[in-house]
Image 1 (spheres, rainbow, N blue to C red):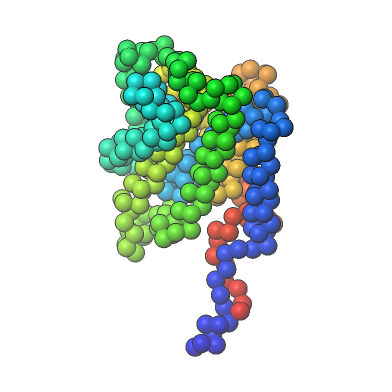
Image 2: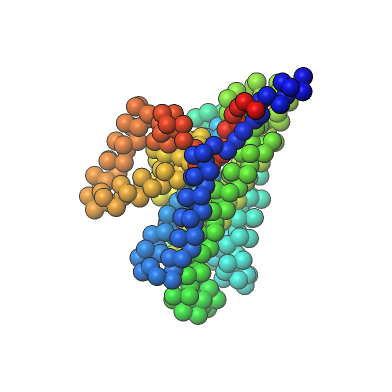
Length: 338
């Protein structure tokens, strides 16, 4: 028996994952050095890339692993942004502390939302998430102290708390965005490698079967939903701290904060940790090439998504991984000879 136990072992890391993690580490160090030599336009592009990557990781966690397809993630982006303004402008919380506190409050608010939405299944759940987002948008548009339908800007005194100079503010926001993006990837990675990650995989494959094997489906899905909401709220707060102005239409834009994110995950590869990273790169490349064509730009993005879903539903990374066996993150368990 001992001889047989020593003959095989379970391995996660592969040569490609070791190389991939090393490359990602070098990339993060390179990005951390950008504020010291790159121009302002590059820094703003990286900040935008960072929060889209974080949003995509959270949506992928919901839909790709927990099977909860949401078209209402803009609800948590908008709530995070508005909570930032309330905490910083009206309650005197320092702006960066307000960013992370906004995520905590959004996570708390997500609990009663989940209790309502979890009564729905499939397409009804997806529509329900959009309805919830619209309720938040219409409700906040009626609050006069938050600017009503026209929104409001951060007071100059709050802006100065971020940094005494424009360069100082942009550098601080840059490092905050980079930290949030890296943190979002790390949170999903650690979650998927834990026991809860195994439970999520079982729920994605078959919810009834996972329940019969002892997985607490409701508790696991609630945990994932609240975690994704809180992290999305943090990203939303950071977005509008950078923009310095918020309005209901901008905060709860389904096109900016949900449709684009869904495109990123589908193109990159849903249900993979690498998919959102690849999808975000593709999305920014397409946007830089075709954004000047106006409405045609959206038609091109939609056409690319349709072709990808028909020809390669597993996404670009899924296609690469299937044909070449590559992985950037050591996620899969492999049985190898000892």
